[in-house]
Amino acid sequence: MSYAWRYERADGTVIVDLPASATSEHFPSQADAETWVGETWRDLLGDGVDAVTLLSDGDVVYGPMSLHPAG
Image 1 (cartoon, rainbow, N blue to C red):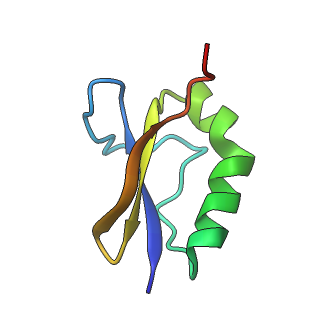
Image 2 (cartoon, rainbow, N blue to C red):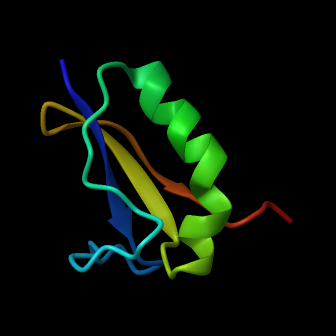
């Protein structure tokens, strides 16, 4: 299995031109993908990514998950 993030705007539009903080990299495990987004979500948010969706071999695992702090 291969995991990857899909980057989205608040309206659900998929971001095609990825910001510098994003990656099109695939991760070998869900844990690796989640660790990466946990370490970089602030940079992604600063670069205009509002939400992410986790994909496994192209299928949605979960999401969209907002990168905006709750509250």
